[in-house]
Image 1 (cartoon, rainbow, N blue to C red):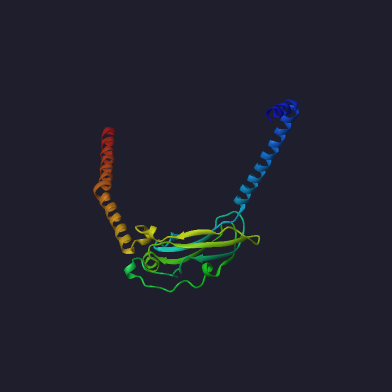
Image 2 (cartoon, rainbow, N blue to C red; image 1 turned 90 degrees about the vertical axis):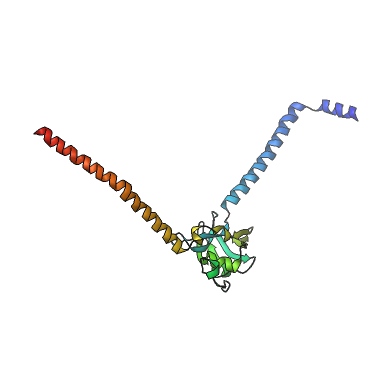
Length: 220
């Protein structure tokens, strides 16, 4: 058997076969590269819908739900499934002052969204830290976002709606506490002005006045 293999290898014109093998290998690698590039470009152009929790910049104690298309193409027929019912407008900065509220029964998260363009979003006032923790507990809610591109169902996205991470932030701070901090800051600024900066300003004015009098004396 070994003799047959040796004789067969001697009969092969390697000068012809090596370029042919290299050509086939190059063709295979080119095919793989094209497929990978196509897949990467398709993924970059796919839509992607997420749901997140943020605090309103203008009203820091208000937590909002944001539905956003973070992809680069139009997304259609968006629907949402939740691991448990979510409350609607659960107010109360601290839990002891909050009440149990009815679950959300309307709006884009319940009724879905026909379409969202790239970067387009919907914002919903969800509640405040205390109200949401009283109604949800500390465990995050899992939301499953389902959507389509050109009528074709895309892989769904799972997001966590977390409230606990806002503990200790401005979203969980009472307005009275915030006002107290601002008043304390103003008090410190006034103290610095009276005991430090204001005194320095007086001394500078006095120095300038003395200099003017000396200049007048030298002229006479």
